[in-house]
Amino acid sequence: MTRLLLMILALLVPTFATAAPPPVILVSIDGFRASYLDRGVTPNLAELAASGVISKGMRPSYPTLTFPNHYTLVTGLRPDHHGIVDNNMRDPRRPGVNFSMSARAIADDRFWWDEATPIWVTAEQSGLRTATMFWPGSEVDIQGVRPTRYLKFNQSIQATQRVDQLLVWMDEIHPAFLTLYFDDVDTAGHNLGPDSPDLNEALSRVDGAIGQLRAGLKSRGIEANIIVVADHGMAPVSRDRITYLDDLVAADRFEMVTRGTLSGIIPAPGHEAEVRKALVKRHPNMTCWDKGHMPRRFHYGTNPRIPPILCLARTGWLIERHGVTSYRAGGAHGFDPFDPAMAALFIANGPAIRPGVKLGHFDNVDVYPLLARLIGVTPVKGDGDLKPFKGALSH
Image 1 (tube, helix red, strand yellow):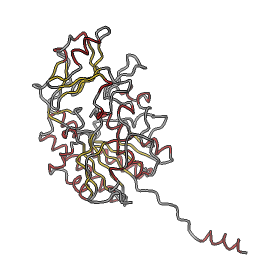
Image 2 (image 1 turned 30 degrees about the horizontal axis):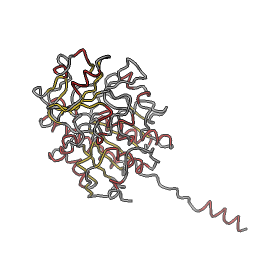
Image 3 (image 1 turned 45 degrees about the vertical axis):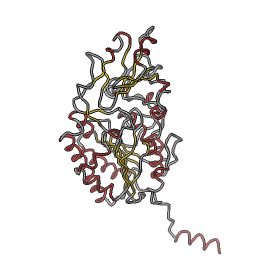
Image 4 (image 1 turned 60 degrees about the horizontal axis):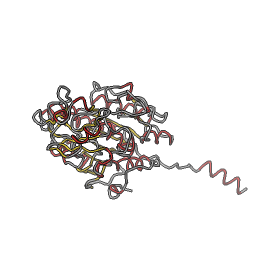
């Protein structure tokens, strides 16, 4: 009789499952230097910061470039460890193949990305749905896994359209984790410089898209944890501030794998000692190292994809070779990650975030464990730490 009564009660009393955590939306505003927030043209971001957590001192990883830092943010690994060591790179296991942002067929090969596990892969493997409205690597079947919803990067898709698509995915599949990427600010910074009116227009345009996202969430009754980040800052450059490597050593003695704010160099066979003698030292507006002797604070130089010699320009300068240049008229990044001009934006806001918290300096590898905590998945062991956010979480 007692057993029968318990069975009847079990049918009558509702079972309360543990509520799923709020969705997490990771927003990247490429090239948003932390100090841009002070310009007064981004009211939506300012409101998110005022009612959430703000840091104007998130330090990017070296090199301060787009692909390496976007992958760091979602893996918690330094570029030296996750394998995306530059926007342009080679791997000794793939002779003659050049990875670059523009070589889509090559960049979409999981070979380049499989050294790390991005957060959307962990979430999908944990049974959670994810959706990526652009993010480096999200188009690739990393470890055989893709987000439930994703699009291949298309710069012509406007910021407002990207938000619209993200909201459609929220209605369709209710993802636990989403990404949203804006390139407007970075493009304006490169083309006309960080102090140009066009840059401020790009800031305002992206801020409007952030407002659109917030309104879309509110109309749906969705309380999301929103994490807004940048991959790096931006500094002005000039044609008058260029160091030409072939002024220091004959052009046929070396090959430049990368050029611009930093340069990876491969000496020609038989000329290794000559090239090292000419380059590996401090110069007036750049410093060059053997890859194994980079400053420890850069956490860089062991990955086999890194060229034998690395040169870093003084902030505001570029490294080129006569007749071959990647110069763009306005601004550049890739400089020392400890330079304030490279400091990246970080804002967190949502039900799991304590309002009114201002964080000090921290490294962007720490964002990954925060994402894992908010999503509710076990993070893969990496280089980051949750400690910087100890006082920023509401529970």
